[in-house]
Amino acid sequence: MNAPLSNSALVDKDQAHMIHPLHHNPAHVNAKVWVKAEGSHLIDADGNRYIDGLSCLWNVSCGHGRQPLIDAASRQMQQMAFCSSYNGSSNPPAIELAERLADICYPQINNFYFTSGGGESTDSNFKLARYYWKAKGKPDKIKVISRIWGYHGVTFAAMCATGIAGYWPSFEPRIPGFSHIPAPDPYHYPMPEDGSSQGIAAANELEREILKQGPETVAMFIAEPVIGAGGVIVPPADYFPRIREICDRYEVLLVADEVITGFGRTGKMFALEHFGVQPDLVQFAKSITSGYLPLGGIGISDEIAAVVRASDKPWMHAYTYSGHPTTCAVGLATLDYIESENLVARAADKGAYLLEKLQRELADHPHDGDVRGLGMMCGVELVEDKAGKSWYSPEWGVGPKMSKALIDNGIFTRMRSEVVCIAPPLTTDQATLDELVAGIRNAIATVFGE
Ligand SMILES: Cc1ncc(COP(=O)(O)O)c(C=O)c1O
Image 1 (cartoon, rainbow, N blue to C red):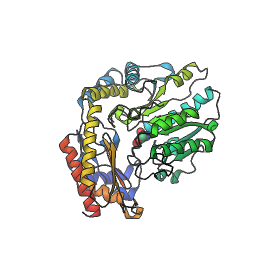
Image 2 (image 1 turned 60 degrees about the horizontal axis):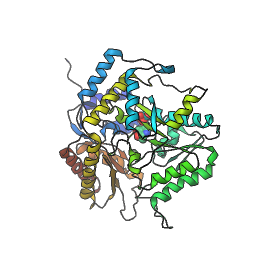
Image 3 (image 1 turned 60 degrees about the vertical axis):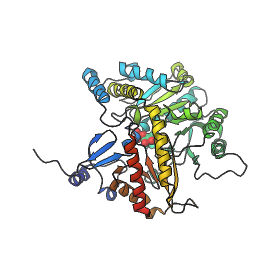
Image 4 (image 1 turned 90 degrees about the horizontal axis):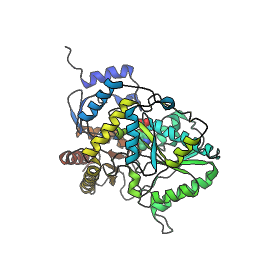
């Protein structure tokens, strides 16, 4: 038998044929090739072990190697790996998963359309919002408002709602009808001079934008309850209640993008629960299968679903893998695992521990601007000047320097340029969380000095 190839030999072979998500050849020469994963750890082709600081891509919430999820896929594949869900065809795992989701999702969300991931879910919601308003006799309501720093995927349409500008330039022009308002970022959002709160002022940006666009043209507002890939931005408590009021006043659908926050990540099953608000549409992916197989979907309010069901026009929207029996079987096993391991409550407790420890260990560092989080998602924002909250210039390269220093300290995660994003599996034990914080502290000391 041939000896296994080293990490660098595999990277060479990879570079001969693979084009990657976010491909940029010069930056990939030291990339990792992963060969094994256990619990909260990833192991590369050279046998090095790293803490999986982001649950891979915020998705492996149950941790790696969970036998019940593996068994569920295997059992369903033996029974029937795939069948179509087109035109009303169905299968027991998909039916049961929709039923289970209706139990655990917001009270007014009881109907589900399945996709294979987040971006497809975003597109499905754009199309459903348009379909709904046309059916209601308001065909001009087509526009989408989202937030700067929001991430909703990068299919062509989803990219237009995504508010991280680096995703746009190579693909301009974007589709007309998409606009962005500032994020409700308590660290950077200016304190209002009229005595109102940051949350209300940031929410009022939506009202201004709806009025600017014309309320009769705006279909939906899409927002992550806690911004994830855009740097873990937790809104003030009064932000979403005010957003709900504005959406109701101008007949704009509120779409919660819970692709990261869904299924316990923030310490609630779905994250708008923190703010006492229900969306009209929700979208999910990632942790629904803990990343073991690609599955996503949208949850639809009773009111919107009733319009779809009563319409004489078919909803001409479809994906081959919508309602895939094997991914749905793994979705069911994941929900069982989340419940039996009490992962939602554990995310709240462990997340509080992680945030407090990060804040305590990093607060005195001159370049630690802000440490924030909710449940098991935290962000550490690194700044050049703590008083002025200003960032290093992009050429200085906080992101690449920190990524390397984190790897050297046994941690694999992603940066939003100047923000270290942290979201380990919800099952991560306290000793590993302690190691994670110590590693981040050491990495910051390596890059910026003590
Ligand atoms: C909030 C959110 N929405 C949508 C997406 C897009 O999901 P996908 O990469 O599965 O298309 C992501 C991916 O990270 C996400 O974080």
